[in-house]
Amino acid sequence: MSKWEENVRKVVPYTPGEQPKDQNVIKLNTNENPYPPSPFVMMKVNEMKDDILRKYPDPTADMLIESLADYYKIDKSSVFAGVGSDDVLGMIFMTFFKGELPILFPDVTYSFYPVWADLMDIKYETVPLNDKFEINIEDYIKPNGGIVIANPNAPTGILLEKDKIIKLLDNNKDSIVVIDEAYIDFSPEGSSCLDLISKYDNLIVVRTFSKSRNLAGLRLGYAMADPKIIKYLNDVKFSYNSYTLNTFTILAGTAAISDDAYFRKCNEKIIATRERFSEKIKELGFTVLPSDTNFVFASHKEKAASDIFQYLKNKGIFVRYFNLPGIDNYLRISIGLDEEMDKLLEELNTFLTQD
Image 1: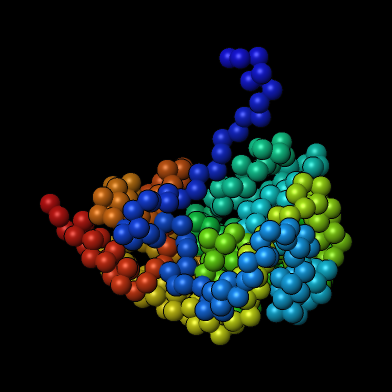
Image 2: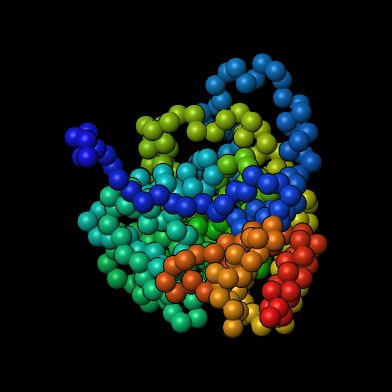
């Protein structure tokens, strides 16, 4: 080893879902929205003047921040935006988690959480889910340096009831509590805990444009919290990179927020497809965890998930397989178009009935 390597920060990086070069595959492995962005987005992009891209973007992204504040009926001082919810969450970890006590998050959840903790030398403890893959709030009522909960959880898709989040907050008033609501728009009305930010000054709600807003390629996420929390986040952001959001992203994100009817229509179609597909795959012998997201988490009673994953990949259908303890016999399947899900069901049936 070279002498300089002794000073390298060595981490095991997050592994994103595979992005196949072949565009003719059925891609159901990264929970992208199967529908195109709102037509308003492309209209706004086409209206851009040639001169706009030679100038730096607005570092405060006021146009976008104000549109989000108006949409959610909160003050703009309660909104923070970043380059996807990953950037927002990374800033949260960097800003708030520097205490002596470990932060807490589930042992089966978004696998970027431990990566950020390791990268930033943050102490953490993973809390086991129960045998139904559910979060037990009682396990989080103990001294800690912060709590991060994905709700609905990923990759399980299970929603934690709002009254349990309230209990979590009531018993952790001295800790920052992050509720990562990347998939909340696919959950029943009233499931979000956004309305609680006015009651709990330690709560941060994180959202993304990648799932329900049809803009994974744009990389845009945001957080909503008490203004003091947002100020601390902005202080760290501007100490790291003043121009995190580019002009294109600010304009397109603002346009997407303005088209609420399209947003709701797409979500309704995804939820309907999710419910239909869940019933059909159960008929093939799969166990499917209850999902309030744009994906399902499924396990077959006889066939290994790794074998199903490889078979489907060979057929040009990409789903997500996690070779991790406790979930290594499950597949996470994103909800695509109806015809894509029908093709998947057809291939699954062929695989399960072959000699």
